[in-house]
Every structure is written in structure tokens, then in C-alpha cells.
Image: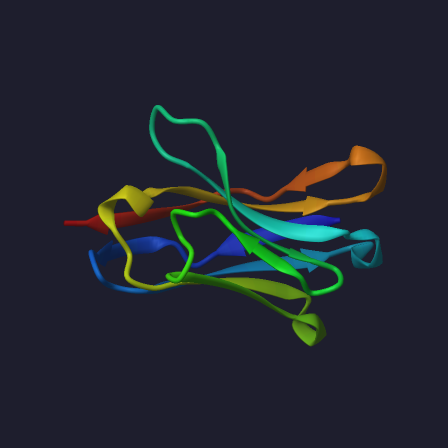
Length: 115
């Protein structure tokens, strides 16, 4: 499985961005696709996740503002980010959970929210 994330950029507070994560390879093995983020000097944290069954979960800090969705035909998972705040500034990573505890990571995409 390979992951390609894109969609980051610079946006003003209150604005929106949509991140995309395109999966390729043995995508039938994927149990869930997750978005993580890591801000400077902070630990990487889970932002949102969508399982192969379609269930979703979100970090408390983004509930009501971010939406994770998937397009199975395009093998793509999206993270729609609305009402962005400066504290959302981070490098965002796409992650796939595979069987037997295997994790696959895509390259990060930088999101910068100016105040």
C-alpha cells in the first residue's frame, strides 16, 4: 500500500482546506485510513479516522469543524477542514492501518493557518 497526501497550504483563520489521501496497491488490506498531525514541538496526534466499514472518529479539538470522508471509486480519503484556527497549523499525515499491526504512512502536507 502506498499513500499520497496533498491539499495543504496557507489559509487565514476561519478559512477552509480539503486534504486528499490517495491510496494505491493492496488497498483491500486497509482496515482504516487516518489523518494525523504534528505541530512544531508537539507529538503527532490523531485527527480523524475512517474504517473500512465507514465508521468515523474525530479528535475532540476538531469535532464539528473537520469531516473525514472517502471515495471508494477514486481510492481517496478526504479531510475537509472548516473554521480553521491557528492551532490547527501542523504537518498533516495520512496513515493506513493494515492487518497484523502494520502501519503505512504517506508524506506529510503542511497546513498553515494565519491569525
